Length: 119
Length: 107
Image 1: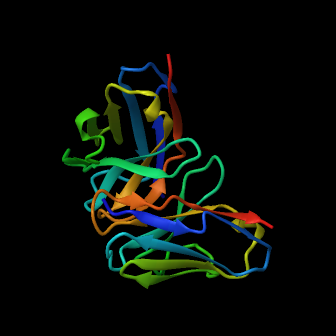
Image 2: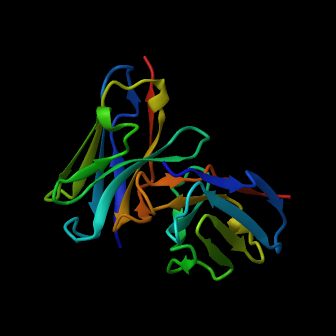
């Protein structure tokens, strides 16, 4: 079965770039119909979809974050990545990667990684 | 963006109770709705999609219903493992959005 695992720094300074990678195991990323997404959860709060990337490299971002976001994919390594520029304390959250089924629901999810923005 | 509003925010119940959580969309989403369960320190886990289709392996005491703008998640005969936070998510229109969550706690 497919499993996802996030990795990256847990602490980022304000104004810098948050970079995370999600490694996929148990299946190829090239299966059509799956979109590889990032979702975040602010401490004690709800869930916010950040964006997705397809295995072809096409991507779609939440308009609220679009100006600061870049996603990439490396199917040979079974990895996809997130870069969020010019971070502030408001970007402190648990970041999840997840597989989105045909632009519908998210299943499965990675375990999540807490990223704190602080000097 | 489509706003998803869940009620109640917190629900106190006992083992064996039947509980119902409501999710309302700010505009019609047909049946393009999913429900997730999240336990502390864990990722959300898919329970239901297309408003009423149970994900493989999810106990049959979970059920979903609704269409348009109003949806419900019902848990029959609440079990100790069911005390968690539940989220709805619409996938009718991007950006995909979630409700704020309903915490089911032990009475």
